Length: 239
Ligand SMILES: [Zn+2]
Image (cartoon, rainbow, N blue to C red):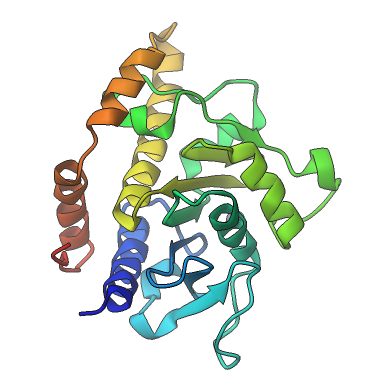
């Protein structure tokens, strides 16, 4: 199997996992940097993640043009992906989702921060991108490269960012990594709302986060991936 075949198969599984775990619904998407050409990325045509097949995966340039002019209609928000790959050579996968528990943290002054060890991977602080700051009143969708680059600028070197009134964007060193962080971003947001109702929260320290992030290896990612993949009716590929 070629590197490209492997990544396309990973993307189909990632879409099914994210749908099955409630991270995406009919909307949201996951991409991977092209394994043989870092200036291109792979992303499904506009379709609900749960329905995506291998034949839906389209190759795009970083500015969001499909290589195959007969490819199906693209996601409006594909610019999120290209702008992040342009800014972050270390990133090989991007998830954009509207996972429900993160939304309140994008519209209030409450900061989403990790206190469960599995959530350390969301980063020390999750910034909130507000498109109104620079682009005024819009549909809130990231509909061109200027918006994508502004979002990528706020993301900086972090793994996650929220988007006000909209959702979240998560990056990873692999498809499995980006899916893993996306799942625990939702878990962390849900738990934080529960903990806030009880009282003051003792968050992870920066040093604890660094240690936990430093220990994340393929063993952990693969253990989660195998379980989530099989739960979504997909097999895990040997990596
Ligand atoms: Zn969106």
